[in-house]
Length: 274
Ligand SMILES: Nc1ncnc2c1ncn2[C@@H]1O[C@H](COP(=O)(O)OP(=O)(O)OP(=O)(O)O)[C@@H](O)[C@H]1O
Ligand SMILES: [Mg+2]
Image (tube, rainbow, N blue to C red; front, side, top):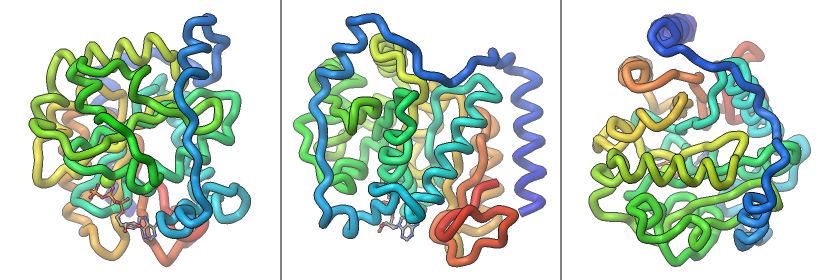
């Protein structure tokens, strides 16, 4: 872990020497009336009690169970605030590390942060990840939105009054080309301008196996690397971290599915963060 931490610090220093970062404060702004109504017009979603168990939505009800995700939320906000970052990509070296489950749980943790507006978008266009985990049927995909075929206002939904969600009804063809397109960048900029979220999280595909992240990460301020305890190797984390450092800032590493926490990196069961 010390080696990883040192590598992250080095990459961060390198990025900061080339990328001037404007410091901003993450805090909920009062929005123009048009933006307020865009938020309230998004249809609200509901979560069934059965789903909470099935999808491991331990953050749903708050309290002790939600502790690790609330801690992760707070660490994300601190890092974002300290560095002037708003767009955070959740990535992993390989599949099934737990990015989408983390994103789904962060929906509830961020909803409790009622002074902020958060946007969580599923940009793993090759899977139906977040919609499936949250038990939602949506008609379109974020691919349709990024291609400019469907306005986000006609696709997004909302949990509570302060978390906007963009999910996928099905896998999307040409995911990589869509994600790296100029149009996708423009659409995202427009969504951000219209909705003025305080923070945006993107559930991404794994780094291995496709070039989706490599084309898209130019559009984010930083990436949070989710590793799977007892499966992701140190080499895989090392390589992923170096690849990320060439593309964006590395916010940190989440050690998911960990049965062991040692106080230095652990914040309750299931998580470590460095
Ligand atoms: N903290 C956790 N403890 C136990 N199981 C978990 C945890 N987080 C995720 N899982 C399980 O791991 C599996 C993969 O999770 P998930 O789909 O969130 O990963 P992913 O990184 O989004 O995968 P992909 O790369 O395929 O999109 C799921 O069965 C999920 O329930
Ligand atoms: Mg996923």
